[in-house]
Image 1 (tube, protein in one colour):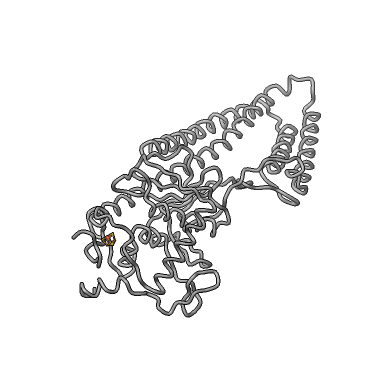
Image 2: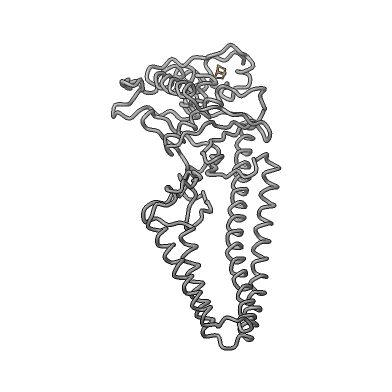
Length: 400
Ligand code: SF4
């Protein structure tokens, strides 16, 4: 670390004196890469340019609040990760339960069929033929649906679903295997409905064969009843697992003021994954969380410590940076970002044209100071300096 006097001088000096200005108003280095500005840079610079300058020179924030904040962020990440894991477990167990429940229904229908078939006026051969006819009909309809873009023709409403995965492997969605949300179908594309027709065709053919060849109906009925009871018990365990996971996730949501049904697309574990970048303006950053609300990716910035009366401009600027990064990386523009102070103080930061201009201006200003130097205190509030975590290295504090 430099001598104290040096620290106070270099805070005003440029970090990239060789940088040049391009036609769009951004500053780049000798190789043409734009000077990198992070969301945290924007937050610090908006708070006080001197604080930002000190941070870029390695003067970390000091104080109990900083240490406590880091601990709190780890805990928030743990809570959000656990919540998301429980939601995944709930959905997965419910999907399995639904499939098993469908099998039970088929078994019960079979039991009644086998019991009553011999007493009915129809012959098993006739019913078997009828089932084969149904199977062929299902097959033909399924193939037709697979080849034609019928969803667009009938104007079926499609629920949009962003599919971008932030931060590599830590995100886990339970997507329906045959038809992910947002699936629109088209020529030669099939989804859940087509699969249902093909499955129905298979089930009908199996039943047709069983009717023709199962000579001992009473024994077949007994076996089917035992299988149905066993399957019901297993399906009940699966349902119980889903309900337990759901109950735990609801409890975590209630304790931490997480909106019911919120899906977590990403939660920052501070281990380096999930860095979002837009090299066209030099911006980068890693939001605390990205959640999915109404089919849109929404950045969430968590602030621990004192809860202010209204959101700080510096924090709002940080959220704008994340909103831009989400738009740049996913191609979907979030309508807003969220700023959370503590557990119950949630603020919306709108992402609109004004916000975009404000963000670009701030990035270009910081890049300009990196190229030309001249970071200066932007306020006359002794209280702000008193609470500043870099006051120990500041060349121009309002209080000692
Ligand atoms: S002590 Fe005051 S002037 Fe210095 S960096 Fe902090 S807020 Fe800025």
